Image (cartoon, rainbow, N blue to C red; front, side):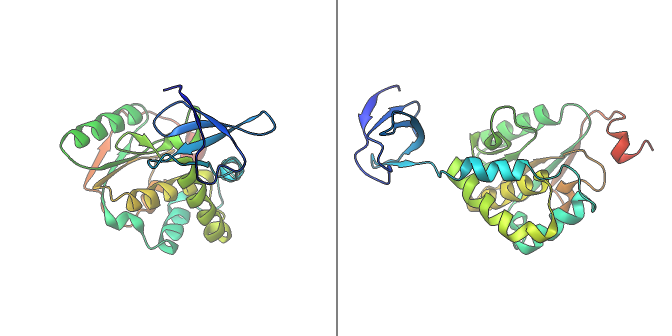
Length: 222
């Protein structure tokens, strides 16, 4: 932790030194004196995080918050294009006004403790987009978020997905790649047309936390 070492191999892009802040996250010192996020690999090599990460996530987050069609329709169509990655795992669907995030976190830890590999999709993020997507408590790496984000932007452009649609589909693609046993999905706004309902399978478990009258301008008041 905090050790300063030489960038011995890999595609470090002209960066000569790095500051290791964790087992895998590094700061590379560029020739111009600035810093670049990097990844420290198990073989000791170093590579730059995809320079496109910020641009791709900025494009995703810049998508409209609401679309003309329901989230359920859009995410369902996009998941269809992707071959429905959610079919590779069981899902737990959590809805409600308050307590969704904490309930999702509790369930994830319980399932992990029982020996299952667990994907967790929550919202919103506080500091970084990758907080939304976790496997066994670890956030999706930036390079994977950038790679999957680029794929989704290319394939889903004609469907005009929202940021939430793209984040959900990214999570399910990543969970399939990581071979999770269970994916815990927290709803967005909620309601019968929520994007998380685009997943084409019946959840193993559905959880409803405390319900209040919220988002009535969009969901209605009845």
